[in-house]
Amino acid sequence: MAWRSLLALSKRNKGLSAFSNRISELQHIKSASNLYRGQGISEVCASNSGDASDFGSFRPLTSSSTPLEASPRTSAASAPVLQDCCVEPVAVPASTGTFQVDNGEILYAGMTSKELVSTLFNLYLVAYEPVVDLSIKVLKSPLMKPAVFRIPLLQAVKRTAYSHFCAGENVAEASATLQRMWELGLKGILDYSLEDATDNACCDKNLQEFLNTINTTLRLPAGSVSFACVKITALCPLPLLERVSDLLRWRHSHPEQRLLWLHDTLPILAPSSPTYHTAKPPAPLTDAEERDLRLAEERLHTLCKACEESALPLLVDAEYTSVQPAIDYFTYSATLEFNKSAKPLVYGTVQAYLKDALPRLQLASDEATRRGVQIGLKLVRGAYITRESALAASLGAPSPIHSSIQETHRCYDACAAFMMEKAAVAEGSVVLATHNFDSGKAATAKAEELNIRKGNDRVQFAQLKGMADGLSLGLVQAGFLVSKYLPFGPVDHVMPYLIRRAEENRGLLSTTMADRRRLR
Image 1 (cartoon, helix red, strand yellow):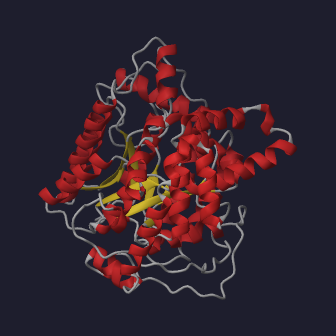
Image 2: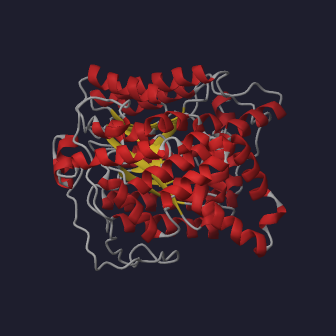
């Protein structure tokens, strides 16, 4: 009955007509997955990495488990204990040892029929631009204010885009999603949806949410969570980050400028870095601003200590160029303090769509090596194209973004190659966060060239939940460590994330074509 309903729905929608032609093929893919059901989860994990310990020991799930609601105001020390979630185990194929993404039957063999149909439906939906455009207009319109419209609209979002791209509304739902990813050989990065902070009270509340999320990971199967993640804009008021960034940019072009509050750090800007944000000398920080800056630094220090005690590396997200210098200042100061061991604890993020990405990465990395600390970086292409281009145009400056997607691809691959060379000689670690299949192929070829062992945690991959699943699964089956970003939180809290995914990443949505082709 469910299959007939889906067929009827797809036939009524001309934009999804191809969907109806693929249902029987999905059933065929599902039947192919039975070929792998004789292999246990622990065996699959071991064959994926060469050593089961690379993935941690899989903890059996109990049917007597009870779900847990999130406790957003609980301290990390007293956070509720997370019970195991019930997830039907589905084994994944053994590692092939090579990166292959053209055989959909093998790639998606570990997914259930329901998951395959849901994935294909949502990928067609988000790639249909009239639907995306209409959805954005509605979600930004006054219709979202009256409860009579808001509630059903949010329910519609929850059943479609939210369920595909997000892990759940609370920690229990997110944990169940993470365990499902773990069964497919994927690790998870739990990302609680938080808005930019406007004052210290908001920052303190956000810190508690981050600590609660870290505490949650301790209750999950060992090795199933690869990183914690944080937005500095959630720990420091946005206006203060803008002020600090202005002062750092001005000091970069005027080295004689003294900043008494400045701690030891790695290079933040390169000679080619744009300074159009700061056209005139910024006023010094006030006493109150310096106090707030110290509070923000203490929050990050608290978070880093919690990650250190939990043996969980921390990814610091990149954001807008107007505040990125301050974010890098926070990140690199923490790098000098916490990355003195054999592996980095704190990872910064470099956005390859920025023209100065490679020289900034090289300066920071080389200085870290010179000073005997480990550099950890996550590489992304970037998610604020519209915002950055509009800001530069409004100030009469050239866009900081590469002029073509091909230039961005070349920059990303160059940054990846540089960091992988660092990783090969144990001078750094990198997370290649990409949805681009060509970049995935280039990175796996580079790993082979550098003799980087499969399963080496100095070179990892990551994708957003719901995006480039074929790439994720192909990398896992080739033996690499792969994580999925799992944003979670109430639907209305996650709306800014979903809208940004749609508005800023239309190019990224084109990767769904590759996934849809492999799902057919």
